[in-house]
Amino acid sequence: MDTSTRSATGRPRTTRRRPDALGRSALPAAALCLTYPDDDFRARLPLLREAAPQLREFVDHAAVTPAQELAAHYVRVFDGTNRHSLYLSRWQDGATRRRGMSLVRFEEVYRAAGLEFTGEELPDFLPAVLEVAARTGDLRLLTEHRDGLERLRSRLTDFGTPYATVLDAVCATLPTAHPFQLGPRPRTEA
Image (cartoon, rainbow, N blue to C red; front, side, top):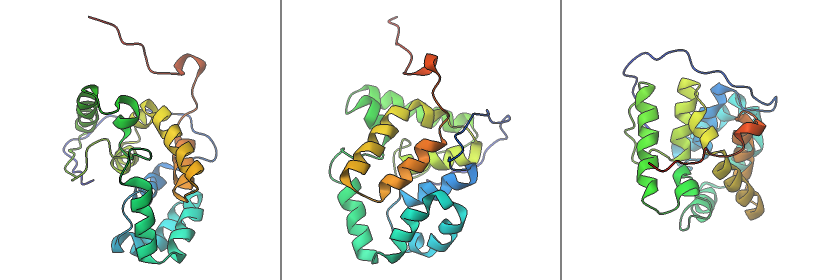
């Protein structure tokens, strides 16, 4: 995701994190780990290893896996079906009309943070959301889609892919749920 700062924003909202969570500076590392493993990705592996110790298991795997094999594995895991979708609104809305409104919501949050979404992907693409969270310190979109992230993490674990460790680290970053915040707010009819 390419973003450009357009205006200053207020102080980011603080959230409680678990001790094993990724630090804010490591969120871009998780974003990079979840993008297609091209030459740029491979060139950044040594930096990723140092920036995010929580991602070392995945980074070490990526470093020793031949480039074509790693790319084929990425495509096998994330392309073709929605079983391992990196598009957060798919987990909440599926292929319904509501998804369009969810995508607008992502763009509104970016705009409110002084960022403009200009990537080739949709604004709910998890690596893009991780980059925005890293830049702003606002974990709201990730927290709102916690259920989908947890389901993705579970499916990646069941699939037996090293990408599951990246989702483990991302999910550990999110604030712990409070009993009164267990699910999305009920929608009211107008």
